Length: 417
Image (cartoon, rainbow, N blue to C red; front, side, top):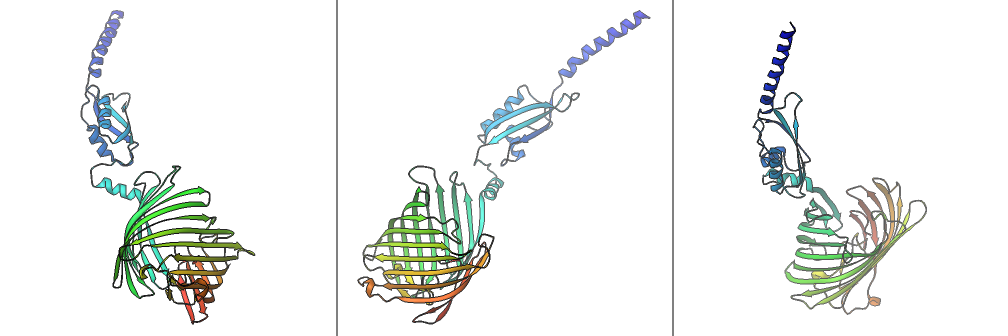
């Protein structure tokens, strides 16, 4: 009996020894592949690049070969391939875990990849505004962020209505010591000149650089080329100049206890007109009074060293400069405007919207080259208005009386200054 038991145990051990090599030597097959870390490249595309097919037998060194194929594609900054068995019993069924880190900006050659890039990088903003004397302008601005690296944006505004405009605009901010912001673009636009009642068509190419000197103070320089046509007048000119701005406003939509001052110079070199040099100063102050009320004052001067062509002369009149007169009533080579406005909010301007009333007085003059400012005739307008600060479409409605004119109603998007 004991002899029979010993013989049975020996036979069982021998059988197990023979079976083990058969299990170990069986071919492994790919049962599952899990991909992690990809946000642009689809899983199927990664499997294609890796050369892996579910159900195929594995060759020796398959793990290293899969990683090498993915690295050679140039689509991934880092690649890690981990081999796992699906269970302790099923050692023939292999599961691969593929962990990748994609190279920024790299996409596949399929149509879906550019579509995904556009969806991820683009933003759309509706455009709606109203300018006194011009009318309603509406459209859409499409922006693509980080097109030229971090802190860059490419915008394509398209508008219709009072101002028909299409443009390609590029801007990028830097942390370099010599320049903090660059912008430029090309545009084509058409709108009616309210003084001549004729269409003003322009093609413009421009570039600008800015640098912040200290908080609130920045200096800028710009250059541009323009092709302009107004009624039967057509010309081309090059512009160049610089400006210095001091701005302490923390809320430009409703400034309080702040100042804004900008001074600048510009040279205009025309094809069919003598070269002109212009200078300007725009000074504004906002003093907080009782509760939420604000006293706002402004003075702006535009001057030229010689006569300007009609399509470059500044306009006076309307909600933006002299209320009580139609937009573009006066025109000249030089311009001076002043305004005093008391703003009385009825609701808090710090919320999502605000409403209130205004009381104002405007004064201004526009005069030709060769005339003296002290001999120029000033025009005055007084009145009151209502304002409503909506998040995307602020509105101001003013009723003004021109001293040597009549009562007029002015509508515009937001405050004039």
